[in-house]
Length: 424
Image (cartoon, rainbow, N blue to C red; front, side):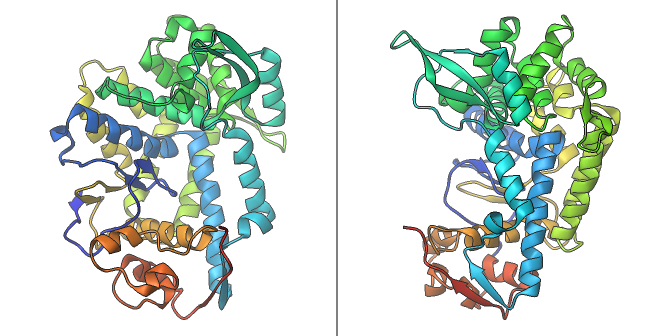
């Protein structure tokens, strides 16, 4: 890892801890010390929460499928850029391209609730709602109970879906490092509430619930997948989460639209190979640093072993060692904290890291319907480098900056850009 806070390539954006658009970029709403072990428990937990989202993308069937679909969308945009002398903004292929539109519609249906207005002290789910969600490929509606008003809400449903699983899993990982975690019930505590309702014997076992989330993310519809793996686990009492995952990915089958039947593990292998190919195309054939991460994910898929779960169930490994062992396998994303930026690999050699950050920067600006600011405008203001072009016409800026570097890398120099009126 290189500390690139001294380099010109100090990239961007407003501060809010999250794993960014292409999952190769973490923004941490905190100061960060490196090496990792030097941080407080709070910062360790906060960092691991976001790092686990990066791992989820590379180590699960749902994560890799979503990432591969994003790559296909980016390829459509690259093709549009290459064959158009005039580029109309904001980008609208998500509304006009049938394949991209279908992907967005699918994710809209399975993502589930990201927020919920009421407390969630209990949930209640009906089996027929799970089966309907399976058939229609949607998140699972559940009723909620609010202790403050001592009442069930059977009309305003919470939808258990992708966000419920990824955020509950990250929340539980965070709590392994720090007990001082304050999150909204939705989506961060939804899996715990589901387990309290339908699998109470594991509802205090973070390791087992993390394993359930990992298995659920091996389904194209994680909300339904969560209830499926819970039933699978109930039939195997005494099996811990590490071995539950191995059984689940080997024994559960997926039937493809053409009638072909594959195990989850075989399907995961197929999607990883597809992802590697599309990522290489998006980055212009320059995939280097992340090639190792994907190759290691393929090795893991071939063995049926999940690195995170193997760490969780090895009591000889301190939690402070998790990050290094996971990073040895999956590498690091590009990391920005308040006080430093960390570049994975070597800056001059590993151009796929630069390409990932650069394309994210271009996409966020070109697809925005709400403002014309460069996504890293706040950074430039703080460093007294903000210029007129940063507000409207970034493509007209010719000084050294990440945006112009990305424009050069993706051969957009000399193109004409037409900005339509933004949504106010």
